[in-house]
Image (cartoon, rainbow, N blue to C red; front, side, top):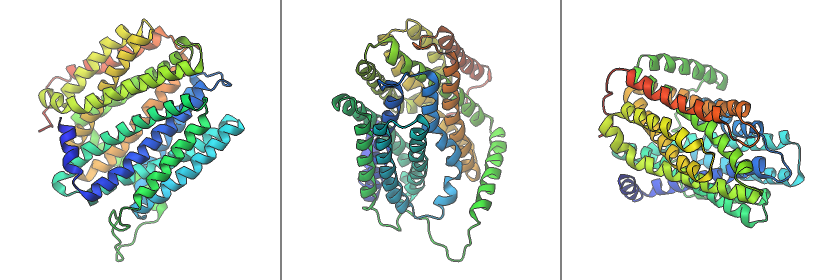
Length: 426
């Protein structure tokens, strides 16, 4: 498989291996922490879970990416990236320990969410630093390969971390605090792994003759830059189409995620442990779909073009969502989780490629900042809409129909676009 072959080539590069180790540990800890948050909100026996509570948890997990993400580079251009990995992961380990203490103390929800928000906010700097560091550890010829392999490996590490969290919680007498502490230990491991990278290797370079603008000025420039990125994107219609389609598909996926959580909690289980086990299976199945998408998307986008591949994926989802979702039974819904994992990740990979291919290099960073905001706000927004539509047991025919209509509208709009897109994969 191309992904496995590319990874084998890159692992021969010493500092890429070490940077990848930091990524894998960081993102696996993220997976553990995110599952700990979700299970505390959804599966704690003392809590009466509601879609609104799930929407709040998703906002805590994702909004820091949207609010902080575009501005992370302002500070990353001033700080040693190796030190960001070291102190960022140490800080997250400490904050996660604090979260565990709050879980044990049964504090008000707002205080728990504030603690969780601080952990996920730091995460944005670490992930941005990992992406910015790649050109410092691989040569130009291997950079595209590294950009393809590293995020996929990180996503799989997060899924594996989530699986570990499910296992620990089931084995540790349903203790969410123990799961959070496991995440803290892995964050500590990521901090220690960063010490194997030379402090000056990852940059940024120190230019004593160059004066940086103040942070406030840099923030203003970032906002203006995002506006310029939007204007540029409007002139690159294929990329704008892909980004719009991905945003709508991410919204649909987010709404179905909230429904799945409620079904696992109430409709398909009689105990919290049983519901948690079902959710763990669903997460693993969906992660398998993400992996398959990474394997088949280069072929599919190469054969049909990136927009053509997104069109096909959206069309498949429009058919499968009502066919597999309306019975509201675990088995067909797990099948749907797998295929929607393929659809969502396949569309994201295609959108990434379309934007990289169409957008001028001078605007690429700003457009991806806009992309990052849309990607996460769509998911949080979907959780909020689902919270208004879902009954307590999670069974909502209108939501299933609405999601199918969104997927169908995306496919139809791309078909009516009128011409086959150029192929971007080689």
